[in-house]
Length: 225
Figure 1 (cartoon, rainbow, N blue to C red):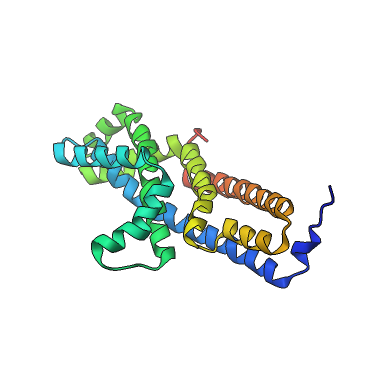
Figure 2 (figure 1 turned 30 degrees about the vertical axis):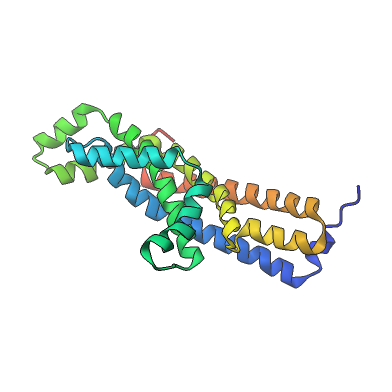
Protein backbone atom coordinates (compact mmCIF):
# COMPACT_ATOMS: atom_id res chain seq x y z
CA UNK A 1 0.00 0.00 0.00
CA UNK A 2 1.32 3.43 -0.97
CA UNK A 3 0.97 6.21 1.59
CA UNK A 4 0.40 9.63 0.07
CA UNK A 5 0.34 12.08 2.96
CA UNK A 6 1.54 14.80 0.60
CA UNK A 7 -2.03 14.90 -0.73
CA UNK A 8 -2.89 16.56 2.59
CA UNK A 9 0.14 18.83 2.98
CA UNK A 10 0.23 20.22 -0.53
CA UNK A 11 -3.02 22.19 -0.15
CA UNK A 12 -2.90 25.19 2.18
CA UNK A 13 -6.67 24.97 2.54
CA UNK A 14 -6.41 21.52 4.10
CA UNK A 15 -3.85 22.65 6.67
CA UNK A 16 -6.04 25.62 7.49
CA UNK A 17 -9.05 23.32 7.90
CA UNK A 18 -7.13 21.10 10.32
CA UNK A 19 -5.96 24.06 12.40
CA UNK A 20 -9.47 25.49 12.47
CA UNK A 21 -10.82 22.09 13.49
CA UNK A 22 -8.33 21.81 16.33
CA UNK A 23 -9.29 25.30 17.47
CA UNK A 24 -13.01 24.49 17.52
CA UNK A 25 -12.42 21.21 19.34
CA UNK A 26 -10.31 22.89 22.01
CA UNK A 27 -12.69 25.82 22.40
CA UNK A 28 -15.80 23.66 22.76
CA UNK A 29 -14.04 21.24 25.09
CA UNK A 30 -12.81 23.93 27.48
CA UNK A 31 -16.09 25.87 27.40
CA UNK A 32 -18.26 22.75 27.87
CA UNK A 33 -16.02 21.46 30.66
CA UNK A 34 -16.20 24.79 32.48
CA UNK A 35 -19.98 25.05 32.23
CA UNK A 36 -20.46 21.37 32.97
CA UNK A 37 -18.20 21.51 36.01
CA UNK A 38 -20.15 24.41 37.51
CA UNK A 39 -23.47 22.63 36.99
CA UNK A 40 -21.95 19.38 38.29
CA UNK A 41 -21.22 20.97 41.66
CA UNK A 42 -24.87 22.02 41.92
CA UNK A 43 -25.97 18.48 41.03
CA UNK A 44 -23.52 16.86 43.45
CA UNK A 45 -24.81 19.05 46.27
CA UNK A 46 -28.34 18.17 45.25
CA UNK A 47 -27.66 14.42 45.33
CA UNK A 48 -26.57 14.78 48.97
CA UNK A 49 -29.21 17.32 49.95
CA UNK A 50 -31.77 16.69 52.70
CA UNK A 51 -34.31 18.51 50.53
CA UNK A 52 -36.28 15.69 48.92
CA UNK A 53 -37.26 17.63 45.79
CA UNK A 54 -33.76 18.94 45.18
CA UNK A 55 -32.25 15.48 45.66
CA UNK A 56 -34.88 13.78 43.49
CA UNK A 57 -34.57 16.25 40.60
CA UNK A 58 -30.78 15.99 40.68
CA UNK A 59 -30.93 12.19 40.71
CA UNK A 60 -33.46 12.07 37.85
CA UNK A 61 -31.40 14.40 35.72
CA UNK A 62 -28.18 12.45 36.28
CA UNK A 63 -29.84 9.11 35.51
CA UNK A 64 -31.57 10.49 32.41
CA UNK A 65 -28.35 11.90 30.96
CA UNK A 66 -26.18 8.91 31.85
CA UNK A 67 -28.63 6.44 30.31
CA UNK A 68 -29.14 8.10 26.95
CA UNK A 69 -26.61 8.43 24.10
CA UNK A 70 -24.87 11.75 23.59
CA UNK A 71 -25.86 11.77 19.92
CA UNK A 72 -29.56 11.64 20.92
CA UNK A 73 -29.06 14.48 23.39
CA UNK A 74 -27.22 16.47 20.74
CA UNK A 75 -30.03 16.07 18.20
CA UNK A 76 -32.62 16.96 20.84
CA UNK A 77 -30.81 20.18 21.76
CA UNK A 78 -30.05 21.13 18.15
CA UNK A 79 -33.37 20.18 16.54
CA UNK A 80 -35.84 19.53 19.36
CA UNK A 81 -35.39 22.57 21.59
CA UNK A 82 -35.95 25.06 18.72
CA UNK A 83 -39.33 23.41 18.08
CA UNK A 84 -40.26 23.65 21.77
CA UNK A 85 -38.93 27.17 22.36
CA UNK A 86 -39.58 28.68 18.95
CA UNK A 87 -36.01 29.94 18.75
CA UNK A 88 -33.01 28.43 16.98
CA UNK A 89 -29.54 28.97 18.42
CA UNK A 90 -26.43 28.85 16.27
CA UNK A 91 -25.25 25.26 15.91
CA UNK A 92 -21.98 25.84 17.87
CA UNK A 93 -23.96 27.19 20.83
CA UNK A 94 -26.35 24.23 20.70
CA UNK A 95 -23.42 21.78 20.52
CA UNK A 96 -21.79 23.51 23.48
CA UNK A 97 -24.99 23.24 25.52
CA UNK A 98 -25.41 19.55 24.67
CA UNK A 99 -21.83 18.75 25.68
CA UNK A 100 -22.05 20.75 28.90
CA UNK A 101 -25.35 19.14 29.93
CA UNK A 102 -24.07 15.67 29.14
CA UNK A 103 -20.82 15.83 30.99
CA UNK A 104 -22.23 17.72 33.98
CA UNK A 105 -23.98 14.46 34.91
CA UNK A 106 -20.72 12.48 34.79
CA UNK A 107 -18.76 15.18 36.58
CA UNK A 108 -21.39 15.34 39.33
CA UNK A 109 -21.04 11.65 40.14
CA UNK A 110 -17.27 11.98 40.35
CA UNK A 111 -17.54 15.01 42.61
CA UNK A 112 -20.18 13.30 44.76
CA UNK A 113 -17.83 10.37 45.27
CA UNK A 114 -15.18 12.81 46.48
CA UNK A 115 -17.62 14.54 48.84
CA UNK A 116 -18.71 11.20 50.30
CA UNK A 117 -15.10 10.34 51.14
CA UNK A 118 -14.28 13.42 53.20
CA UNK A 119 -13.22 12.57 56.73
CA UNK A 120 -15.97 13.57 59.14
CA UNK A 121 -13.33 14.94 61.48
CA UNK A 122 -12.52 17.67 58.97
CA UNK A 123 -16.09 18.95 59.11
CA UNK A 124 -16.21 18.72 62.89
CA UNK A 125 -12.99 20.72 63.13
CA UNK A 126 -14.47 23.39 60.88
CA UNK A 127 -17.54 23.58 63.11
CA UNK A 128 -15.30 24.03 66.15
CA UNK A 129 -13.60 26.92 64.32
CA UNK A 130 -17.05 28.50 63.97
CA UNK A 131 -17.02 28.47 60.17
CA UNK A 132 -20.36 28.91 58.46
CA UNK A 133 -21.87 26.08 56.39
CA UNK A 134 -20.87 27.88 53.19
CA UNK A 135 -17.30 28.40 54.41
CA UNK A 136 -17.05 24.76 55.51
CA UNK A 137 -18.13 23.54 52.11
CA UNK A 138 -16.08 25.83 49.84
CA UNK A 139 -12.96 26.12 52.00
CA UNK A 140 -12.72 22.70 53.62
CA UNK A 141 -14.92 20.07 52.00
CA UNK A 142 -14.91 20.90 48.29
CA UNK A 143 -11.13 21.44 47.86
CA UNK A 144 -10.37 18.12 49.56
CA UNK A 145 -13.06 16.33 47.56
CA UNK A 146 -11.71 17.68 44.27
CA UNK A 147 -8.18 16.67 45.24
CA UNK A 148 -9.34 13.10 45.87
CA UNK A 149 -11.07 12.76 42.50
CA UNK A 150 -8.79 15.03 40.45
CA UNK A 151 -7.37 12.19 38.29
CA UNK A 152 -10.91 11.05 37.46
CA UNK A 153 -11.94 14.59 36.56
CA UNK A 154 -8.94 14.87 34.24
CA UNK A 155 -9.80 11.56 32.57
CA UNK A 156 -13.38 12.72 32.08
CA UNK A 157 -12.14 15.99 30.58
CA UNK A 158 -9.98 14.09 28.08
CA UNK A 159 -12.95 11.90 27.26
CA UNK A 160 -15.00 15.04 26.67
CA UNK A 161 -12.37 16.26 24.23
CA UNK A 162 -12.39 12.96 22.34
CA UNK A 163 -16.20 12.99 22.24
CA UNK A 164 -16.35 16.34 20.46
CA UNK A 165 -16.00 14.41 17.23
CA UNK A 166 -19.70 13.53 17.52
CA UNK A 167 -20.74 17.14 16.99
CA UNK A 168 -19.46 16.93 13.43
CA UNK A 169 -22.83 15.24 12.75
CA UNK A 170 -24.51 18.65 12.98
CA UNK A 171 -21.95 20.40 10.81
CA UNK A 172 -19.61 21.88 13.43
CA UNK A 173 -16.23 22.29 11.76
CA UNK A 174 -14.18 20.65 14.51
CA UNK A 175 -11.27 18.26 14.00
CA UNK A 176 -13.22 15.18 12.87
CA UNK A 177 -15.31 17.27 10.46
CA UNK A 178 -12.12 18.75 9.01
CA UNK A 179 -10.71 15.26 8.46
CA UNK A 180 -13.84 14.16 6.65
CA UNK A 181 -13.73 17.31 4.53
CA UNK A 182 -10.18 16.51 3.44
CA UNK A 183 -10.84 12.79 2.92
CA UNK A 184 -13.84 13.50 0.68
CA UNK A 185 -11.66 15.62 -1.61
CA UNK A 186 -8.42 13.65 -1.65
CA UNK A 187 -9.86 10.11 -1.46
CA UNK A 188 -7.01 9.31 0.96
CA UNK A 189 -9.19 8.22 3.85
CA UNK A 190 -6.60 5.99 5.52
CA UNK A 191 -3.93 8.69 5.59
CA UNK A 192 -6.38 11.33 6.80
CA UNK A 193 -7.76 9.24 9.66
CA UNK A 194 -4.27 8.09 10.60
CA UNK A 195 -3.33 11.75 10.89
CA UNK A 196 -6.48 12.47 12.93
CA UNK A 197 -5.57 9.62 15.27
CA UNK A 198 -2.10 11.06 15.81
CA UNK A 199 -3.51 14.54 16.45
CA UNK A 200 -6.07 13.29 18.96
CA UNK A 201 -3.45 11.24 20.80
CA UNK A 202 -1.02 14.17 20.88
CA UNK A 203 -3.65 16.61 22.15
CA UNK A 204 -4.98 14.15 24.76
CA UNK A 205 -1.49 13.52 26.12
CA UNK A 206 -0.84 17.27 26.14
CA UNK A 207 -4.01 17.82 28.16
CA UNK A 208 -2.92 15.23 30.71
CA UNK A 209 0.48 16.87 31.01
CA UNK A 210 -1.01 20.33 31.52
CA UNK A 211 -3.49 19.09 34.12
CA UNK A 212 -0.76 17.18 35.94
CA UNK A 213 1.18 20.42 36.37
CA UNK A 214 -2.01 22.31 37.22
CA UNK A 215 -2.87 19.74 39.87
CA UNK A 216 0.44 20.34 41.60
CA UNK A 217 -0.41 24.02 41.85
CA UNK A 218 -4.03 23.54 42.92
CA UNK A 219 -3.48 20.75 45.44
CA UNK A 220 0.13 20.93 46.68
CA UNK A 221 -0.91 19.28 49.95
CA UNK A 222 -2.53 16.29 48.29
CA UNK A 223 -0.93 12.94 47.45
CA UNK A 224 -3.95 11.65 45.55
CA UNK A 225 -2.44 12.53 42.16
